[in-house]
Length: 123
Image (cartoon, rainbow, N blue to C red; front, side, top):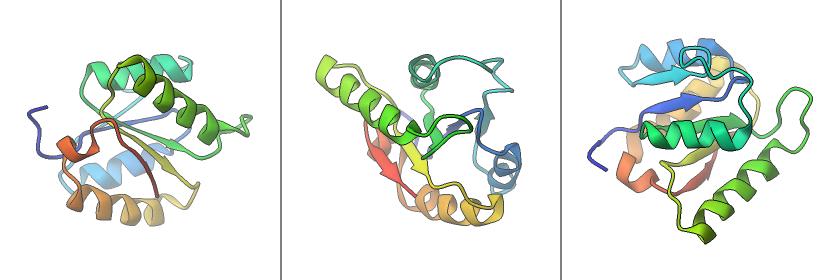
């Protein structure tokens, strides 16, 4: 991995305002809408993020899906046991986009892309 700063890929249930708030601080963010990936399943979303060296951000629960956190924890475990890699998964409790941006910026300013590789973090 050759990037110092984490570049994000936001799950489709994450408010796009968060992308604008993080971009305003100089970080690179792509949403599922930007990437024309709306409707793809979780495994496909994570694979897309990994193929573009982006850390995946999702909520601990999604609209209509109570176990989003468990799903991504299982995907991370599957990657680990199968020897696949990803560029990190961040699972965030659903919050106001401004509060979530503050929490996310703490992580983005303290953790490098290399340190995030194959990691699962919670904010």
